[in-house]
Image (cartoon, rainbow, N blue to C red; front, side, top):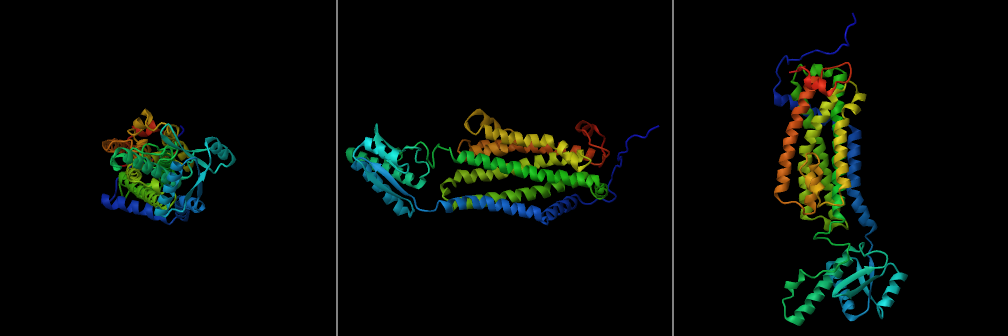
Length: 419
């Protein structure tokens, strides 16, 4: 009679009870210590930090030269607006300058635009001031265009006040120069929204996958070498799992804090410093909170995936459902970026794991009420608690099962193999 495939039926009951706090803290400290001593991990983190900080600073360095903006005008009022804009730039200490180029009429102005793409044309149309370029709208001239917008508002307010005796301050908020591209505040988020969505999505995906596979790899290595059987004689399985979760969560969260702080600091010293608003900073803080809660859920599932495997090669298969979940969240954000106010973004804000990216993204554009992130984080916490319980059950029932991959159904129905 052929013996069945050998498998470990070793049921562990700790020979001596290590205090639960002492046990998981020891495991967590070891996880952190091993990772911080890993030169590859440290070097990769430093490279990431250099890229995050260096990208906006280098871009500002290359764009740091003063831009001389030439503005075509056809009348004295437009010339006065350009003069006021230059005065505004000078008072702010900006390196950019604006200069009026006087032409006779609109036909000549358009001809000059065709001859020189660097020129822009300031004129009035239907009572509205316009600033147009020939090839593109002047969307790459941030400081100059803001100064022109301010000058237009001041000019219109002064004219209106002079004609009607109205307090100029009461009209300032209604005066603006429309370019169709640049608006550092208000509802034009054509630049900041995709950036926030892509950055948070990439950070979430990279860190979740990086540390998730670290946890799964650590679990399967201990299982494959049977070291876990020794460890489980000194502590309970849930304490061993909890220590791994805490240690890797601290590492992932610490790396994320460093990256976010470095990125915001670099951005504040770059030419895009006007994007560093209270709304953006607040959304980054909420992203940290959502990531912390969401990562614990994913880490628990990755640990369960590691316990289902018997060899390191098996982790790619057992962890694939978790990977599909992470990739689905990233794809959801990318393909819905064009309609942030739509139903997709609102639903995603309350779907666990997806809310890690969606809710901070909506907050960065001011599209979420104060209670929405609170409700969303409570839903995510509930999901995380459930994920930890599921992961812990699978881990305990499959960590000592050897002889091949353990199916999820078998692990779920398996009798307790460890205490």
